[in-house]
Image (cartoon, rainbow, N blue to C red; front, side, top):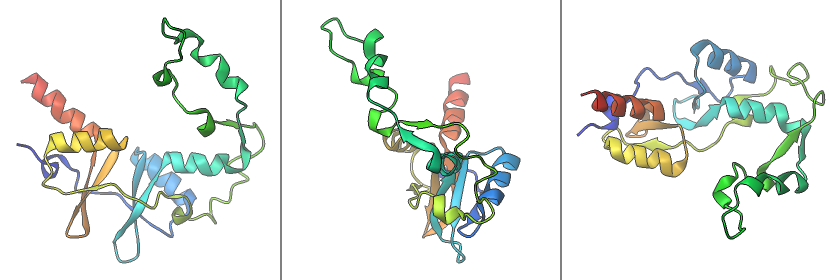
Amino acid sequence: MRTVRDIMQTDVIAVRQNTTVRELIQILDEEGISGLPVLDSAGKVRGVVSRTDVIRLAARDSEVPVAEAFWEGLGQYDRSPDGEDDPDAYFLAPESAVMLIPGSTTFEQLSLEETLVEEIMTPVAFTVDPEMLIWELAKFLVTGRIHRALAVDDGRLVGIVTAFDVLRVVAGDAEG
């Protein structure tokens, strides 16, 4: 049976907590990745940071809660025959929605040179054992609704595995 170790990427790109957001954006763009682990000065995993975190930074001062009226019409095409709303028909809960006000904040106004990764990162990293079986990894990613997990062995980062890596295994198995 295949394990995380068999499919994980061992050449992991990571940033330190004191990396600026501008540097982070450049790394994400140059490497064509959507997120990466954040390490402290000793090389210990402290969290993860992603493009979504950068977007949240940009939106922080320009978000306004969306009025409930916005959500009223969304379920009209997704009603069951008994007239009840299908809760699975919605992509976001109303309380999590935000509306961006154009012109209220731009990247030029953000202090990308002053804001550090540790200020916007998710301070929790989803970690897995390199010996975890692929089906267990798939279940872990789906259950956690996450795109990547860090493979950690004896407290040290040894690799990264993504949902795409799992898809590659499934596609390879399907071929033959």
